Image 1 (cartoon, chains in turn orange, yellow):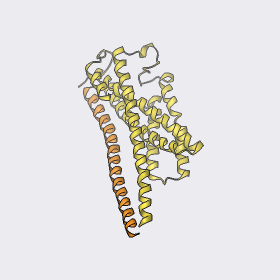
Image 2 (cartoon, helix red, strand yellow; image 1 turned 120 degrees about the vertical axis):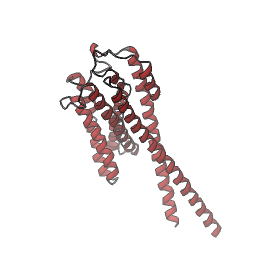
Image 3 (cartoon, rainbow over the protein chains, first blue to last red; image 1 turned 45 degrees about the horizontal axis):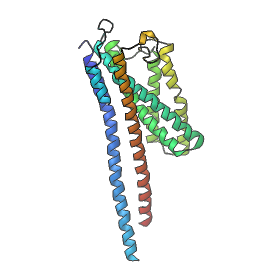
Length: 55
Length: 218
């Protein structure tokens, strides 16, 4: 490994891990927010229906 | 495209002369090391523009750009700070040289991004804190031209510049082509990550609006 192959492998694995992990976190956060927004909008729509029925 | 760069870098790009290098194969780190360094400089530019837009004009998009710039600056700064010393350990026999200005100014730039990201997460989001962080972003950008100029003015350990350097820094055309493909690939990746961050920001704002409406009803 005197030619540096092991160092090269460690460096690339580390960079792929960091960039992949960060991007994965962004995508997870976006999916989580989308689900929470859909649930909140559904709750808002239900409450609007209840109010109109009461009236 | 970044993966294609890596594949080309390992399979198509030629090897360097083993007599000139201690760890000849380790040179292939540059196919990502240089593109992520450029990506971190671009992130610092976004940070600078966003900080200026917020500090001078109180523009909300400016603050968002500041936050995105700090995050991407940390991400790509970290990649440079990991890959560089690993290559240094293989080639120089030491991961760091405190007398090399280039290494030190870049480390400060990455530390600045870390400070901003941690600050955004720990401090209350008020105009005063935004002003403080924006000032750091504005003055911190000075490190970018200093870092770029450092290897031209105080050449020590770090290899000479590849683009617009002197004759000794010239690269084989195939190596340069693969590296430039990497630079292009990472610019696209950065653009995609900025768009994702803006999408998330938009979703967060919409969620706050809907939750506020729900709170008002119940």
